[in-house]
Length: 218
Image (cartoon, rainbow, N blue to C red; front, side):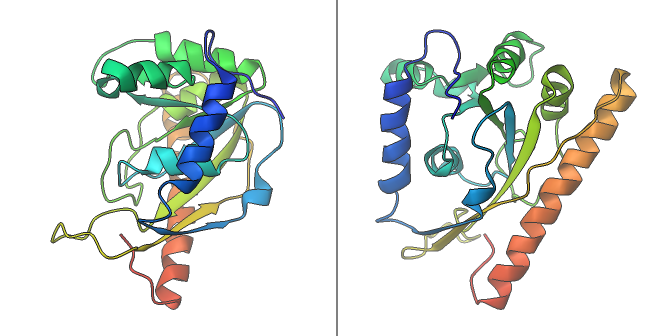
């Protein structure tokens, strides 16, 4: 498997973090993973996921069966925690600012055959992928990476703000797919909508499955 990461990252430390992310949340959640065998073992891979809770990145990084560098909000990269995130190869992004540095770093990882993760919605919300930002499509166009969608449900707090006792959490790995993103803003917008549609459909399929089995959607 390819372990390409940003320059200066410590792969062994990332592996320790992945193991932690895989197991330390289990006392709080009943975690089930579906379709992990669909993850390509090597080659450039752009992982896209819906986002409705702070634990989503930890779950995806932990459950993904290969090393990955995720684009995360720069506010997290402070103090000891921030140094740890940089050491394990995660990439800070300043929201609301034009900065190609994190995207260029991510493209470098992809072109080296690594995996990069991004939450196309840009921030936490309902997690239904009603809207998406252009970063994911830009990365596909710049790198030619295969896209892997992941749907997460069960991590979001209910509307009353009270966490249920060990809620059921499902991660569904979708089928990887190739995407041709055309030139210019029009191509970027079309590519973004295709990514959004694919991811939203996967989330909806997971919602349907959870509904049929009596599990809450958030």
